[in-house]
Length: 362
Image (spheres, rainbow, N blue to C red):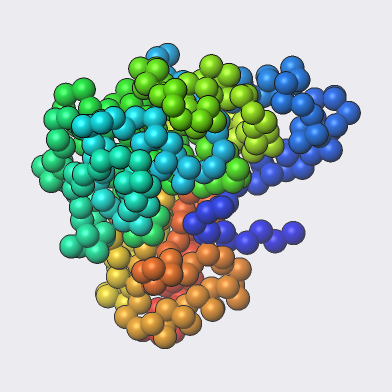
């Protein structure tokens, strides 16, 4: 078996060890005589998986006791609506930091629910950077401030999170960089992330929410969309995406085996440096798309000086076993997504391919 060099933006690479373990346990799990996909979510075996996965998230991400860990469905896109449904109030707008496509989608949904304001935007720079602390202006009466930690399309990432004054909770969409580096969870009121980039396969969304925000869930919205519903039922209010949660469990144990999140951060920086160095040392053959101080460690976006060469690059890369290097259709160019499970060997191979491509076409 030859594994592809998988640089897909999501669903994305999973650790080979995790896939092999899931393969071994696929038909029968825990001596139950059935797959975990076949068993009741009310069974003791599955409840153990659910509880253990919550505990692993708490341990690895340093989640304080006054936060709930929820496993929900609907992806980050559903959270774009659930957050304003649960937290917007009359006379208290949701403040949004606009850094690209995903932030735009979040505010678009919130506008359907209630009042919103733009706290900062980098649209004039084509969303190729994140705003500084001084650029973010939050109304005193804001219900919350929402930001996208890492924008997969532009390849930008907050290197430091803004400090929000007063009692305004900070909310972060960390779908594409959760558990890639240590984070002070207590700085946030709510963190959410679709699993399919750093946590597991698609199908489950992790929500980390402070207890006081859980208690704000209004009773006039359907139960399935209320955070307190899921918190009271330990994410088992309705049938959960059980196989996806099980896979997240295995990925978290893999992160644990690698020394935890701090070790992964260094691993991620080491492997992405190989590619960024190839861009920066190419004499202009390759150019980074994102501003240098906003560069993502998860999504490396870059250009070649002609679209014809970019198309040739993608075509030849696919012939050499690389997958997912074509840039997002909205911005074009090239993109390598280097999430936690992308091996160092894949990044080395890409850097070598880039050097060879430049040598033949420069």
